[in-house]
Image (cartoon, rainbow, N blue to C red; front, side, top):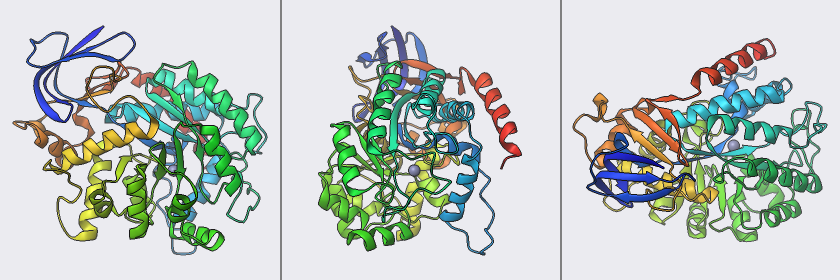
Length: 454
Ligand code: ZN
C-alpha cells in the first residue's frame, strides 16, 4: 500500500483539496478521500497521467538528423523516410531495446504513464526472421520492464509497399509478415507482454491502407477480437491520392464505409480529412490519434480540430517519431496549429473549462480509451497512473484549478512534472526517472555505435 496526499487534485471532473489517494499493491487506486490529513508522500497537484497513444520507439535515435534538404531542393516526408530506411540497415535488437528504454524514460519524465508502441520492426536487416519471431517484441517488453512504463504493444501488420500490392522494398523487408506469420507473432507478443505487469496489454496494428490489403485488414481486425486496433490513416496528401486512386474513396471515407469503426479503433494522424470524414469519424466513437509535434516536423498538415470537437469527437495524443518527447508541448502545438489556421484563440475548448484543462481532459480520456486501459481518472479501481505538478515551481506560483493546467501547457514545460506513478510504480521522483543513469548510459553507447553508420 502507498498513500499519496495532494494539496489539490483533479478528482472525477472537478478540483478537490487535501486529497488522500491510497494505492494497493496491485497498482490500482483503492480509495480517494477529500479533506484528508496529510500522510504518506505529500505532493502539490495530482493529476491522472495520460497514455501516449502512438510511438515508434527506435525513431528517437534519428531525432535531429533529418533537418537538411534533399538534393531535389524540396524536402518532404518521403526524404525523411529514406533516412529511416538507411538507419534500419544498422539497427540490432540490442540497439532497439536501449533506444526504447530511453524514450520510455523520457515519456515518463514528461508525464505519460503508458505508451502504445506501434511496433513494426520485426526482422533482420535482410528480412529473415530472428530465431525467435518475437525477438524485437521481446526487446520492447524488456525496455518496459526496465522503465516501468505501462506498455500496450501493437504488433504491426505490414505486407506490401503500396495499394497495388507492390513487393516490399529493401528498406521495408524488416517489417513484412503475411497473415499466418503475423498471427504467430501476435501470439508471441501475448506471451511476452503477459510476463509484464497486469496493466500491460496487446492490440493489433494494420499499418495503413497502403501497406495492408483489403482482405488482410479484415483478417487483422478479426484477430484483434475486440482489443484495440490502431492504424495510420490519412497523414500525407500523396497517401490520400494513392488510396483514392486505388479504392475509389479517400482513406477515412473508405474505412468508415467498409468497417465497423467503433470505440476500439484509434485512427492515427487524420490530418487529411474532408468535413464529411471529420463528422463521420466523430460519430464513430473512435479515437483520433493526434501527433502534433511530429505532424509539424513532417509538414503533414493540420487536423480539423475545431469541427471535430464541436461534433463530440474523441482524441488523444502521441509522440509518433519521438523527435521530441513533451506532453505539454504536444498539447500546446495542437491548440496553436488551430489558432494559426482559424486566426482565433482558445479554440479546442469544452463546456466552460479552460483551454489547457479541456486539452488535458480530452487527451487523458482518449488515450485511455485507445488502449482500453483502466486509467484516466483518479478513482477507486483505476490503475494508479498519476502525475504530479510541482507547485514550488515559479510558473505555478499562486495558480489554482484550471489555471494550473493552462500554466503547465502554455507557459511552462515538462520540467514542472515532479513525480509519476504508472500503475502504482513510482518511477519518476523529483523529476528524474529512478533508473535514469543506467538508461542514459546505455543509450549513449548505442548512439556512439550507430554514429558512423548514419
Ligand atoms: Zn506513426
